[in-house]
Amino acid sequence: MSQELTPEKLEELKHSHIRSFSTRKGRISHAQERALSELFPKYELTYDKENKVNAKEIFGNDNPVVLEIGCGMGETTAAIAEAHPEVNFIGCEIFPSGVGALSLLLEEKQLKNVRIFKHDAVEVVRDMVADGSLDGVHIYFPDPWRKARHHKRRLISPFFVDLLSPKLKTGAYLHCATDWENYAEQMMEVLSAAPLLKNKYEGFSLVAENPITKRPVTKFNERGNRLGHGCWDLVFLKK
Image (cartoon, rainbow, N blue to C red; front, side, top):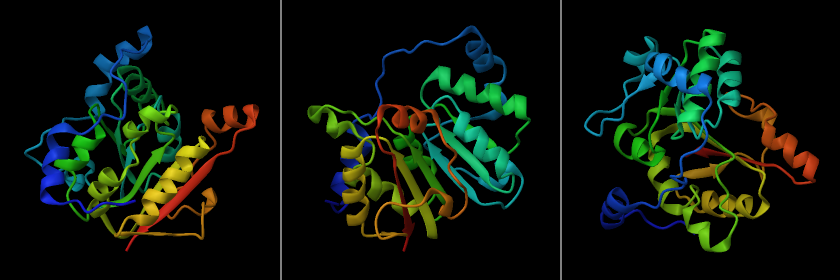
């Protein structure tokens, strides 16, 4: 299912990639809005297509760097960062409510190892992440775009995976999770066909064996359990 990312296709993606998120404005609480204005600047990374991310300059150390795409309301990001102070985390979240909520959690926990882009992750990866610079990528419960006519908007696609894969160091991992079986099947097909990646397992992964961090149980897991849904984790390594 993977397609070669030719210069022509890359140029097309640069200017017209399909957004994997809805641009409708979501609700934001007063506390989140206040955190967005008062706390977020402390953790903010500004999108600048002319400059690559310099993790050593940002964090002041040479620790491993993990990119999280879609931080949601920040519970998972903050929990993993708190459990792994030896790892630097860069989050991408487009929605103000999520950025505000994560900023609140980072401040409450006094975490120093997280920074946040409030920007489209595809553009951040494309323009600001250097090849061979990431030790891991987390993509947890991206929008499944359930209706068949919307599947083209799913983040895990051949174009995006081919764009993302070179950003990983050799041996680095890409960990995806979804509670939507059809999307899990698509993820497996796309990632298995990616020329720069190999599955760490025979099929879907054991969360506890994630190469660097363990994914905590999230509200999506709990909801899925209540509804009788499954949850699928995939861990692929950069060849």
